[in-house]
Image (cartoon, rainbow, N blue to C red):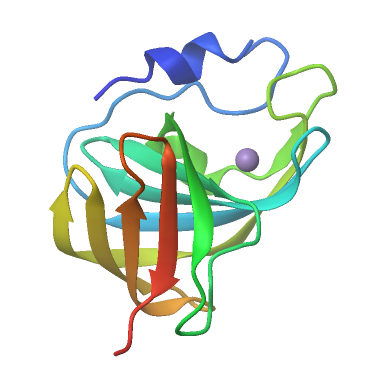
Length: 149
Ligand code: MN
């Protein structure tokens, strides 16, 4: 796991986002951030702590809260674990410019995982229950949906 890509996209003298580092240990935290981005528009960012970083997906229409709804989740660069607490304004001209706020957070339980599939149970305040993330063939595009409990 590496944060090289995360660091290279940001100028930490200009953005309030944490520089962070790859952490040891496993806390199984997740966060869903509301990102009101100037370029990409409003979306959710889902981040799952794995291997000392936050594996991250941008979800244009948000994490589905109802069974049977499949949504696109675009894999983005791993973020620093410290990002799970980040809320603030990324200044105009910087990568991801716009406002970030925490929509939900908590722990998750990993149920199953391979290169193209992650099954996990979210234990947040708003979003709970088992979810699936499945990668579409050799792309950064995944589908996310809520699994029947
Ligand atoms: Mn985002």
